[in-house]
Length: 289
Ligand SMILES: C[S@@+](CC[C@H](N)C(=O)[O-])C[C@H]1O[C@@H](n2cnc3c(N)ncnc32)[C@H](O)[C@@H]1O
Image 1 (cartoon, rainbow, N blue to C red):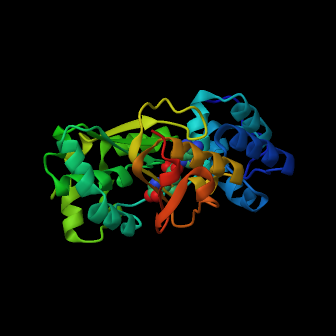
Image 2: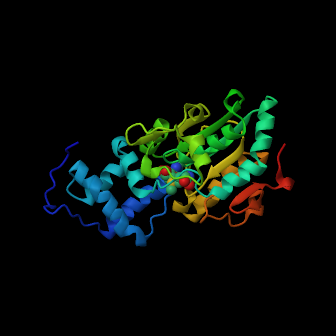
Image 3: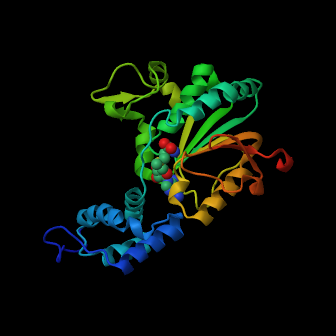
């Protein structure tokens, strides 16, 4: 796209005025619940300048027009620039230990009996989180993919979802708590400089594009929801709405895992109780039939 010539930016630098920053922050907040406070202005400026250069735009005001019009070609890049996609296999490993010791055996048993079992990695980034879940399930029972057991993996960022679906990662991104965790997830040999996940893991996961602050085209409840290091970008009211919506999607004996720097302020008020570090379960008094 070459809409404009970069007239005022011979050095490739751009001014981000307070009013343009506020326009950007408003689009991010209304559309995606993202919280861009003033302290983030230099970071936002530096990340979005790359977009202005790529699009050969003259200034931030023109960029604001583009995103206010929800330009479909740009919105994905805009979101990518505003959020971070940092993730890793078995990140915050204590959640996976909790799952493997206290949750997965029961889920597998129920799935074996023909019950429907669903897990959701919400804000899955490039896929390491859902692949870790799949690795834990399959290491417990190699037949897991033959049951009615599925992992839904969603993210707002179409670019990271493409990476997730490919399931191939640079060697440097492939760190694991132990060699046995690694062999559950990755094929033994590198394909060039990339390591690939086992096909069996992919068969358990459906990757979907979903904005957590929009409608959720989701039916049925979940036994496990992981939404870690995502709500941290949202303002407080958006976070509170999100926790409440997750609560409505949980089966009575389900678990909700959130990120290490996230907290649900008053879990009781929305029918959740603390079950472990950043781990919640539905409150027995509020379990709906
Ligand atoms: C830091 S990563 C966390 C990945 C993984 N959950 C973990 O903890 O390793 C945050 C992810 O949240 C996604 N995200 C941010 N806002 C979102 C929204 N409104 N809806 C869905 N995903 C969103 C970003 O695209 C990014 O991939």
